[in-house]
Length: 418
Image (cartoon, rainbow, N blue to C red; front, side, top):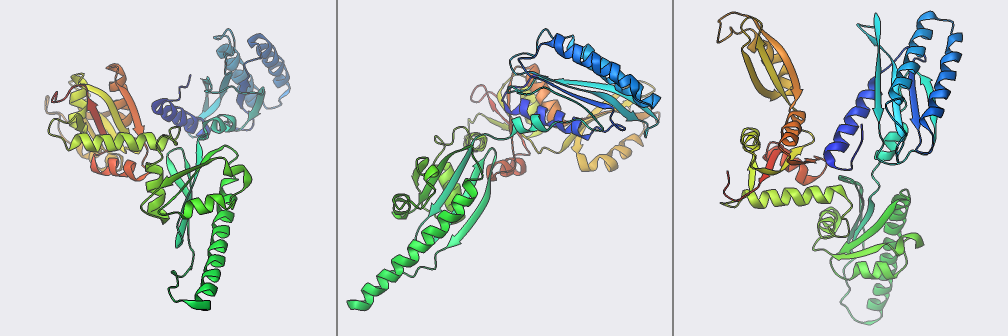
């Protein structure tokens, strides 16, 4: 499987890794093989031949057979490639127990990683080793956010599809003293000292959080009024963060200010997936309120528009928890297809199966197929050449999309075209 950096490919890749991670073997019967770009296929095959010969010394006849079968299957898969390619090649091969462990079946998966793998790895274990591939999937675009005024501050991290590590702090600084004389000057000095301590405290927490991310690309410093500039000039932040500061004016401080700062920094955060998803949902909401809007939403309406090839871009919630179910009559071949929430599978399907076939009137209905609706929609869109974007529910707009639009929507090719 090759991987592009679009949301559908990443979703399918994560799903495949989750499937592979769940597979377990007996003893050391599962083979994990990572082949870097600079290693020749023939060298790897020769290496596996040696491991095959070594496996002949395994005492257990069944384990010996399973390990050798797994190695041979990996060799046969390798032979499909002339070279590992620019990013390398990963193969998982092994005997997976079936029928509650009574039998086993050799399963083989190959993956072309999205980024080059650097080291050769061969391992036999009771599980497949996916850690290096999961590390490749780790979000690389990470930004820090500080929103501050003289009363409160918030520190957060923007990474991938969410805002995380959000912390808020209050200064305890009293308002300006309006009385004259020496007491006023003393009050101002105390106020300035308290503010300075507040800035130090916020910077200390920000440094502690941000320096955990060596890949941090920038720091958004925001807030109403001049406090953010004072904070920036005061060199409170760690020296390695100071040249990454991007200053933004916001109407709010605290947690609301963080969301506003992110929204106002879309260009600065262009590598962050969450910003792109938020932009798409905001565009959807705008189109949905127009009389001649390009928005189409709702499962039935979207699928009809897809069939008519009227959709330019399809949006699907990654947390769409629905199934497409196919029921077939074993007597006459009648078929019925419907969608349900996954939680209804155990209750609604038995009701359907208990009914008589509407065509032949026999009680011979059987469950033929259940498929995730998200996979069906992706397949339908790809068949029509329609681009698909998957939307996470980890941010506010994504959660609203899932609840208000049912997690399925699209943009039409032409206004008034539906």
